[in-house]
Amino acid sequence: MCRKITVTLLLPLLAFISFAQTFNVEKYGARSNQLKNQALAIQKAIDAAHDAGGGTVVLTSGIYYSGSIQLKSNVVLQVNP
Image (cartoon, rainbow, N blue to C red; front, top):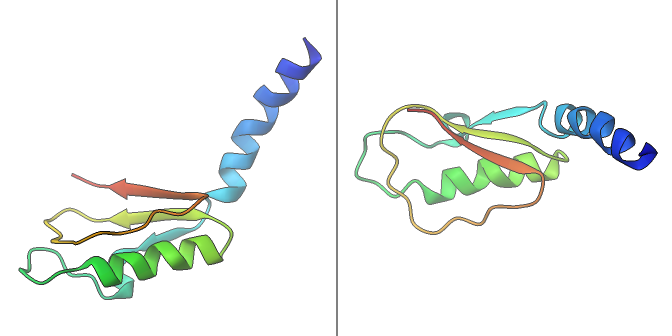
């Protein structure tokens, strides 16, 4: 019983600490609605979030053409409609 309560109380706190920072892909050079591959800029944002200890990488509305990207631990990819 105590173990379940401890986990329940810690999870929201860990989520707040890990994902408090937001990394907008446009700050790293990505541009929506262009026919150019945006994978490098998106990967730079993911890497910056990972290097900061975690965070949320945000893709604002639009279309982003991309090749392969590598998600990393403690990074959330948020795709806005």
